[in-house]
Image (tube, rainbow, N blue to C red; front, side, top):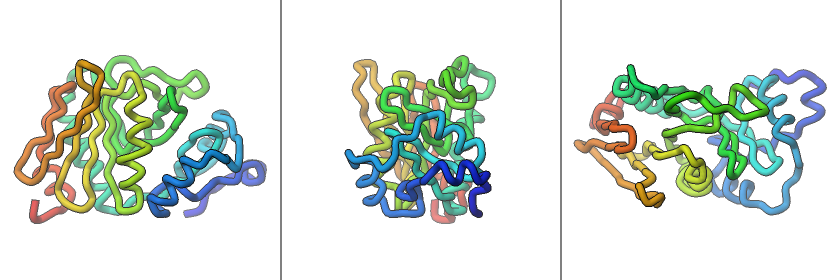
Length: 223
């Protein structure tokens, strides 16, 4: 479905379609790492576009990148992960958000929509946008063929620079596998990979994610 922008916004913005599931991960990495930006949009410009558009975009270094929609399996895995987190965190100080929540990594400026976000304690929002949080405790990304390299590389680096963030959970699209990146007491990030029959633990939130249950909920018969 095409963006329903008003004519003024359509004239103002030239969105780069080089980020998101619609293109190859190589194009994503080359585009987002490019030192020569084509545009220099402000964060306010980006927010104006998001307000008028019915599709989502990422923002980084003055560029706006279109984000294409994911597959049915992608959507099912995201919901399964969110449901598992919600059951275990219900009644505590943490809230589980869908991919409709916009998150800004203030240290690097990346603004994006993780597949699932957990915020603990009061939401801290960006001074320019009350709908953009800056203090996620955990984010989940469901990988895809076109974005896996970006999600495991540049995007993960942006996430790890967020002071409040303690864990990043990556769900594989190729096989039943969950990778948990977690910040240790020494500040260093370490990863653990869990496959079939295993439990992926997020120690900072005392959360246990069953690989079998999440992938079965997404329709994987062999999980």
